[in-house]
Length: 121
Image (tube, rainbow, N blue to C red; front, side):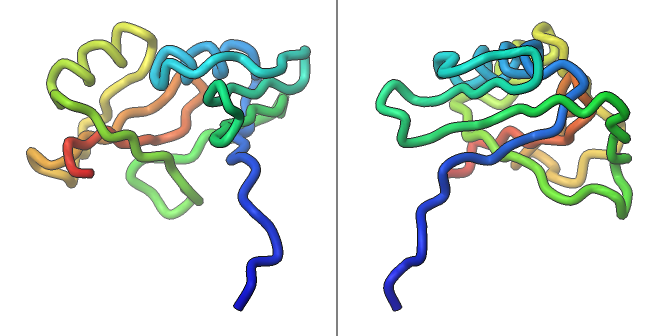
């Protein structure tokens, strides 16, 4: 079956799109492609991969663990401990509940979205 389209970006709701774009830019090393008061996008230099951020003033943060989360991002890292240390220094928090053992760590970004870091490719 031929595809109908290609994924252009994953977009996260945020009370401050620029601030969350800066956080994920530091996580990925990607550059800011566009930023306004209501929207921001970061991506690879060739634009093949992008994450978007859109303003939602009354964002209800998902709980962790909980049934109200809908999706999360996973990032592959070389050293799990070092990555967690760097990410928490950027503003991520590490919740108590950690189901990944030594395989992955769940963190919460500054806007309240859970995401994971793992050494598994």
